[in-house]
Length: 103
Image (cartoon, rainbow, N blue to C red; front, side, top):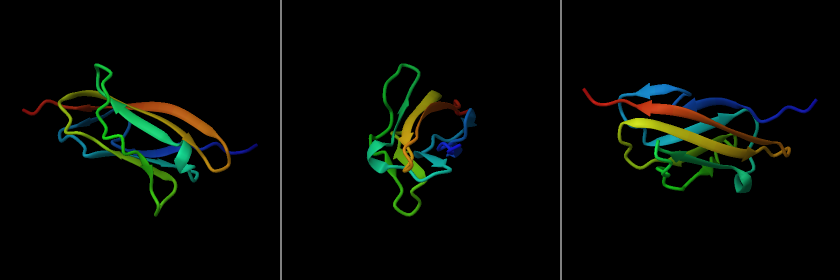
């Protein structure tokens, strides 16, 4: 059986509750990604895209995908991604994180 590309780590982590808004989202997979066919986006609760549309696979580590974020207001955010590993597997999933209200 061939292995699929699996998300092994993310910053922010799945269901993270953050005090500071993150400047970017980074996703690590267990396989190298095909940059031309690997995408991600971040949306707020209203469904508006809040990333800077600069998603890229790292040249130093082809298993890492990252994208920059606009300054996020408190609320819940969804990271949706669809990546293609170099051996031809497509993985599509999502994760959420929350930016908490400042006290």
